[in-house]
Image (cartoon, rainbow, N blue to C red; front, side, top):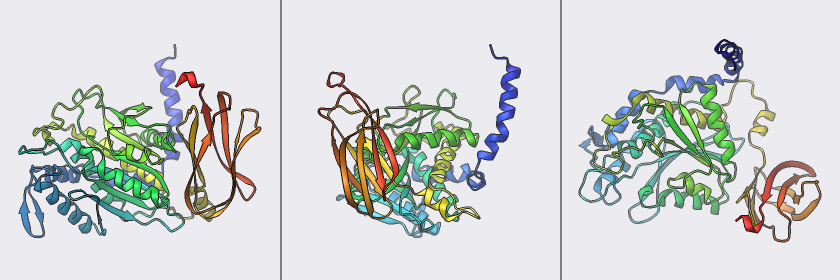
Length: 410
C-alpha cells in the first residue's frame, strides 16, 4: 500500500510541473470570471429579476418557443452582446426559431472555428411560467460571461458564442446551424456545449463530460479533462463515452464535427425541478456553477489558443494542422472519412492494414480548402485494425486508426 506521506510527496513534486503547464492568459481569463455577473444574468433571463429592453422594463416569465417571453429573451440577449462590444447576428430557421450568434475573429492564420454554446429556449409550455434557470439559463449565463471575459483576448482561432433556440423541440436551432456549416464546408475545431450546469443536489461536485469517437470529440474531451487538472477547477468529472445525444452537441456529431457536452450529474443526481415552473436559482449550488462555467470557458480558450508574445509563425501553423476523422469508428461495413485542409492542395489518402500494407486507395488528386468527405467500403476486408493515412505534397500529414468489427459483432 502506498503511504499518504508518499502520495503527498509525489503530488508536491508534480505541482511545479502542473504550474508550468498553465497558460498565463487562460489563468488570467479564469481570474476575471465573475459568478456575480452570471447569477445576475441567470436571474434576469429566468424572470426572477426584470430586464430593460430598449428603455422599457420587462419580465421574462417564459422562454418557451410559443411564449412571447422567448422573443423578449432573444431581444435582451442581443442587447447584452451589443453592450459588450459585439455585433450579434440573428439566424432565423423557421417561423418562430432564431439562433443568436457572435463571432470573435482570430488572428487571421486560420478560419477554423471554436464554438461555446447553450440553448436559451425553455420548458414547460402552456400557460405556466418557464423560468428554466438551470436548464439552460445556467449555460446562457456562462456563454455571456465567456463573451465578456474573452472580448479583449487575442486567439489564433475565431470563437463563436452561440445561443440556440428550440433545443427543447429536438435541437432544431443547433441542427440548422451545424447542417448549414457542413454544407458550406466550414472548418470547426471543436464545440463546447453547456446544458444545465448549476444543480448539485447531493453536493458531491460530480459533473459529466459527454463525448463519442466522432471526429475529434475524444481529443476535445481530453482537453477539458486536462484543463480541469491544470487549473485546479475542483470538480469530480465523469467522462461518459459514448455520450448522450439529448442536447445540442449531438447536432454537430450528426454532421461529423467534434463536440462535447458539459453538464451536471444529470444521470444520478437529476434536478427535481427540471422542466417545471420551479426551476429557479434558489436551487443552484453557486460555487459548483462557477466551477463548471470556468471549466467550459477555460477549455474554449485552450482550444482557441491564446496568442502570446513571441509566438512564432510555426506555432500558428501547428495550431491549425490538417485534420482527418472517421465515423463510425469502430465500423462494420462502411465508414465515412473526413479531411479538413486549411488551404487547397494535392493529397493522397490510403487505408493500410496492421502491417502497413495499402489495402485501399481513397483519393489521389486535388482537394479544396475546407472539409471533404469520402465513403470507405470495408466489405471484403477482414476484421481488425487499419490506419487511414493522408499525404499532402508527398509527406504524411495526418492519420487515424479505424477498427473494423466482424458483422456478427454489430
